[in-house]
Structures are given as C-alpha cells and as structure tokens.
Length: 73
Image 1 (cartoon, rainbow, N blue to C red):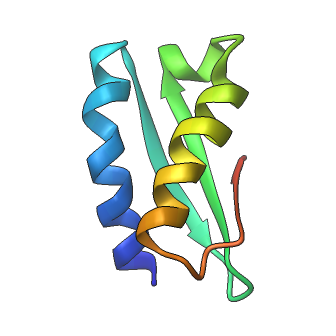
Image 2 (image 1 turned 180 degrees about the horizontal axis):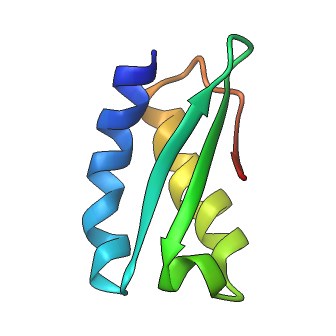
Image 3 (image 1 turned 135 degrees about the vertical axis):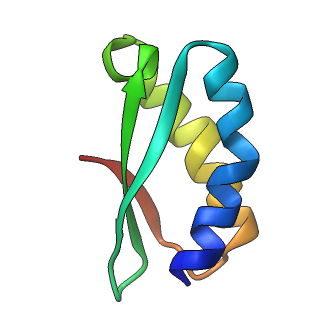
C-alpha cells in the first residue's frame, strides 16, 4: 500500500511545488492512516490543513481506497 500512496502523492507534488512547498511520506500504518510532512512553504502556511484535507487526503483516498485518513506529523 505504501507504494500506491507514494504514487498518489507524486500526482499532487507538482501542484505543491509550484507554490514552493512539498509533501513527504512519513509512514502508512496497518490501519490505513497515512502520515505525511508538509515542507517548504506548505510547512508554515496557515492554509496547510485545508490543503492537507481537501487536496492531499482527497486524492490519496481516491487512488488508494484502503486509506482511512491522512494526517500531518
């Protein structure tokens, strides 16, 4: 599942990088929780939680239905 999550993140990455940020996969737990770290401009942006939930989580869940949640660590 980790490889599929990474592939989904690779689809999102260009959009984040265009705004000076990025996302790094930290872990995928056995119960379907994906842990990521937002870096660059995304790491300190006040809208980062919206980006995480409305963007990153939505795409990851769409690509990997077994994922329950995406959280920032």
